[in-house]
Image 1 (cartoon, rainbow, N blue to C red):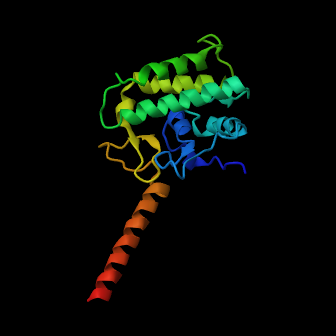
Image 2 (cartoon, one colour):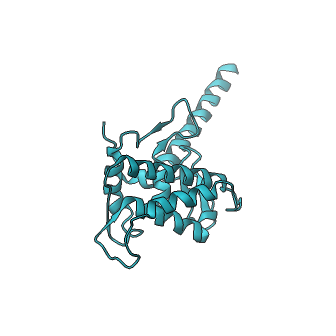
Length: 195
């Protein structure tokens, strides 16, 4: 069944983090699953990312030419980015053992990308993904990468005081608040029954 690539699926704040988040429940191996297990979903994701990440992409649309090599490059970049940025949450330095693997994956995705000045209306998904990862690595935003307390997704915390807890308040934030409310009600009912 095709994935509904809605706004929530792009809660990471950058294309590279949205892509790392295509593995759902990464922190729970028993329930985790990969939305890119069907390679056709990579092309669908890239197509909808064109509108959800329009500012980051300079208004260009993304294309994905599906081949085994292209799928392998995307998955390698996704996994190496996830390992590095997850390991650096909380202020760890980027001089991490996973940095060389990410840089190699970025280089692989940039091969055959065309000249830097090319202003093509379409951009290869792998190229956009590599550029997004480089932008995150080279700027101060990597220090604001957080892990959502509800779904375990990576996101850039752009709040003023860098205190955001959830990738998407309307989804994960509300789920956490509902869970806490349920637990408080359950405790209150249990206390009343014991009285």
